[in-house]
Amino acid sequence: MNTELMDPRTGRIRGTAAVSREPEVTAAVAAARTALGTWSALTPRDRARRLERLATLIEDGAAEYAARERAGTGKPDTETAGEIEQVADLFRFYATAARTRTAPAAGRLVAGHESWVRWEPMGVVGVIVPWNYPLMMAAWRCAPALAAGNTVVVKPAETTPDTGELLAEHAARALGEGVLQALAGDRRTGQLLVESPVDMVAFTGSGRAGLDVAARAGTRRISLELGGNAPALVLPDAPADTYAALAEAATYNAGQSCAAPARVITLAENYESTVARLTEAMGARLAGRDFGPLNNPDQVARYDSLVASSAAKRRPAAGLAPRSGEERGHWRPALLLADLPDDDPAVTEEVFGPLLTVQHAQTVEAALDLANSVPQALAASVWTTALGTGLDLAARLDAGETWLNCHLVQTAELPHGGRGSSGHGTDLSALALQEYQRPKTVTVRLSPGTPGSRAPGS
Image (cartoon, rainbow, N blue to C red; front, side, top):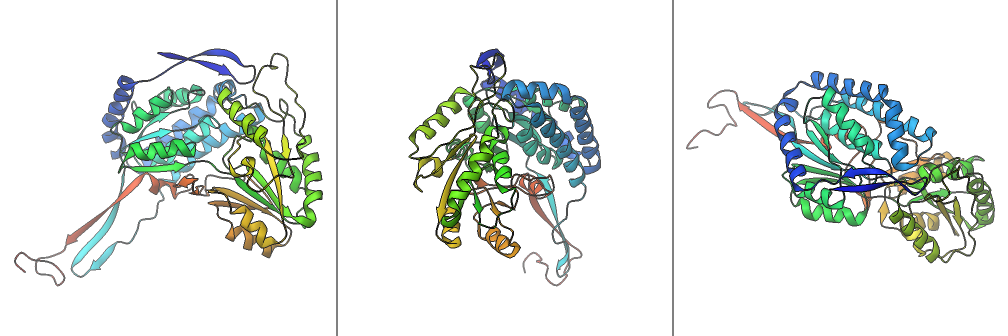
């Protein structure tokens, strides 16, 4: 069974991909289970060496990864090059992190006994990733899971299987057969993977799909990153480059980023100036030149529906700069929505496109309340030259990641994760290793009859 793949730049069919069903899912999970014993038994040093080899293969194959990523997403060269570099860096980071993890309490914690804690892999991890960052989201999930000693079966999105398949090919060479596999397929493929005998599920995607994953996973551990609707608090004393920086972050990857700024909130006294400056900044960002298209027809329809249903009275849009042959692609211009109610669907829902809304409040406290008024709580930013005010607001924003006078600045060393309807769990940083491990306490009685020990019949 195959499905057609579409080029989002042109709207034309670019090829086909397999759709995995129960036999393929069963075989992949069985292969991962077989590989688990050998992979998990490796010392952290040996696992690190193999992950380093995988990073080298990714760097050596950067051109092919970029071509595949562009085919599935339409991303411009500037975006794909940076993301592939981040992916290689991520595998190198976890190669090191696996060797430097900090152990919890150990020693003679009970009289006459020696205790310690072993951190053991979960086992076989099923990973499901979306189409907005096909390679990078796979690396965010797979790298720490592998470094922790798990084997992985990853299911890329139906529209973007290309780089996941190449990553699995390189992993077979660098890590061993069955350690990291890719399953092309649709939503049903993902459901079958969750229902299969995997030990853990790591899912990145929509809130509705995340609830379905949680229901199917039952008592097994799940890690969920379910999207965002990030506010950007822009105070009257914001730095001069605030508006250009927000426009760039809001249109990176055509705004199809869970942590992208979506809702600009300012004070009433600064509202008209903010709308004017953002109109200019968004107008300078051209689809087809500065960012790519929306990914697929379903996302186009959803985006267009949200924009059409908005009650915004002002909606200045930038132009399009599609190249020859791309007129029928999924291109949408950078768009600003102003003079809209606080409960507008473009405000309360994750739009996931090259769009910013602008709201205003009478006081800083009221602006903070607006920022925290939606159920999503993944990321947020504050823009002010008053450092004390900025740090205070960053601490009070309901978000797993906050920025001050910047947005979308991330690195492997810093954790990323959501709250509320944005899910739970940790991506990135050494903390993510614990996401894919479980502790086991081991206690040894040092000698019979030692005080504190429990002898038979006592």
